[in-house]
Length: 276
Length: 276
Image (cartoon, rainbow over all chains, first blue to last red; front, side):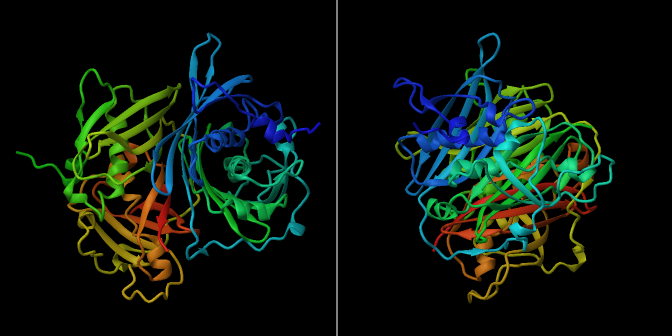
C-alpha cells in the first residue's frame, strides 16, 4: 500500500461526472490548515491541478492568478476549470471553486485565471540572480505553533525571520529562506504554486506588530518547464519576499523562488489585506 | 459641444440592455492602435471601466488581472462584468470581453478578475521609495513612428530608452520614464490601469534586438484611493519597469508608478510572449 504525500492528499480531485466536464470534487485538508481556512497555497495549487487534469490541456503553466473570495470552510468543495480560448501555442483558462454554505447554497470561494503554453527554446537570460546565501547560512527551522500547514514546509530563514519581540521595531519587509516540502517531495507546478505563498505576512515583519492579515489575490509566473522542475528533485528552493507599499488596509508582496542551482523558477506577487 | 478626451472616447461603453445586466458594448479605438490590435493598456482600462460602471459596485479598485486571449480586432466588442462575491468590505469580479469573428461566432478575446474594496485608514508606509530622478533630468519625448497609441502618452525617458542601434549590445532591462496622458487628463483608475502597460517590451532593451513580443497577462495593484488620484491632477507620473527572467518564449516585467510627490500609486507585473 502506498501512502499519498500530504500535499497530494490535499490536492485529491475526483471527476464530478460525465455531465459536468471540467468539474472536480475535493475536500479541505487538515494537514494544511491555517488560521481560518486552509493555507492559500494549497488552494492555488488546487486551481492549477484542476487545469492540469483537464483533457483539453495545451502545454504547461505560464501564469496563474488566484483570488480568495471567501475563507474555504472545512469540508467538500467543487472546482471547475474551463479552457476559454485555445490558440496555436497558448491556452487561456478560468477556474472557480465553490462550496455550499450552511443553508446548502453554493457560493464562489475562489476564482482564478491561468495561461498555459507550449514553450519553445529561445534566447534566455536570468536578470535577477539568486542572492548569495547558502543553505548552510540558514538558521534553524521556522516553527509556528498552532498553524498546521507550517509543519508541511521545512523553512530555514536566512534573514527576515518572524520577529521574536512584537515591539513595533521593524525596519524592512525582506525575508529570504530556504524551503522544501516536509516530507520531501519531487517538485512540480502545483508545489511551486503553493510555495510562492509560504511567506508569513510582510506587515508582521515591517511593523514587528502582529495584526490580522490574509491574501486577497496572488499571481504567479512560471519561468521553468517540467524538465527544469524535474532537475530540482526534492531539493531546497531559495525564496525571497518583500513588500513595496502598505496603504490603508492592503499591502503587496513580490516574491521569487530559485532552485539550489540558481535557476529563477517563479516570480510571484500578491495583495494582502491587513487590519489596523 | 464638449469633445471627449481620446482616452474617454476609447473607453466609451454603452449598456447592452436591461436583459443583459453587467454587459456593455464598445468599439476599438484608432487613437490607441498598436501593431496588431489596440494598446493592451486600453483593453485593461476597459475591463476596469465595466466594473466601475456596474450598479452593484462596492468600493474602489485594489487588484486587476487582465489576460489577453487573442488580438482584439478593429470593430465592436461586448464586455461583461460580474460581481461573483460581495463581502462586507471587499468584492470579487470576473470580466470577459468578446468579439464576433469573421463567421459571426463570438470568441473570448480577454478575461479579467478584479477585487474592489472599501478602504479604511490604517498604519501605512512606502517600502519602495521613488528613484531620485527629476522630470527635469528626463531626455526628449519618446517617439515611435507608426504606432498610434504612443502619441497618446507624453513619455520622457530618464534611463533605459529604446535602443538607438539594434546590435545585440543590451546589458539590463530597467527603464525609468515620466509619463502622462496627451492631451493631459486628470488621473483616474482606468488611466492608471493603462499607464501600468506603457513600457515597451523589456526584451528589446535587454537584447538591443527587436523581436515580436506581446503581453499575455498583466496584474495591477492600486495602492491609492480616488482622493490621492485627484491630488495628482494632470501631473506626470514616474514609471519604472524591469524584467526578472527571460526564458523560452516568455519574460516577466515588474513595474511601479509614483506620483510626482513620491506616492507609490501602482505596482504591476506582466508576462510577455516573445519570439526567438
